[in-house]
Length: 369
Image (tube, rainbow, N blue to C red):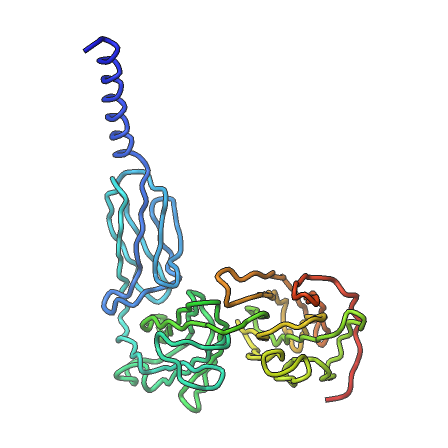
């Protein structure tokens, strides 16, 4: 073997050794799932801490740290209502960790709640709905095997990993709430707290939103106690953009939830599928088929008791692989009560193309209720 070839072989061996050393003391990924230890139910919203890094578990209880230096670590997981979980990890390669959290409460019974669609039909795990909303009902006497052993303090629904409040009715020992769905598959869980602050979470239920056509979805949401209303007017570009509270001419809102004058047939007419109020609530409008014209979107502060931040999401083509849309941040104060706020206009052209445009807003009065 020539000197040059031996030199090249030596360099190759050294390079391989260096790569191996770099990998052993290099950067790796750490991923895993947070669950209830005794049920295996995934836990969304848990704070996962590894060294100086932290993240939050998703709707499936999953977490990931894509870049972790090799070494010894303590993985810590915290979620309100559960004992903190600790696990020691030795990271010298890509690592998967599963950690179960403990609560002293009895196991949550899955028959203590059920889901319904917009037609009040029961929705089973793995089922599908044709409108992008869902209702959840729970019954306190069935949430735990021995209901007298648990003093329930609060209940929330966890939709796609996001907590939403559930309105309770103590007189009838039940509660309910409506929730907006995303395109495709959605996850639903119930989480219950007792008076001492401990929590339990139900099994994960999946519900798929699928429709032949789903052109437009509006969701107005807010966090603090308020009653905000979503209004949608359809006009021609030659008509003015006037907010008239009680005028029902091509106007969908809480008092005219299923108008019939936007287009021809149910598919071309919008539905107000949820009219929310209180803390952490929302309003939603769904329209399967957009037809040519201007769709003016307004928000109305029916009741505001403190500064309120809201978000309006405008989504198109929910049944497509990649829905498009825009989000608008809105702010309301007590001075805005009984005042409409113009947000934007969706203009649909004759060829079906859409764009956001600004149309000079005017406020009218309309007929009395």
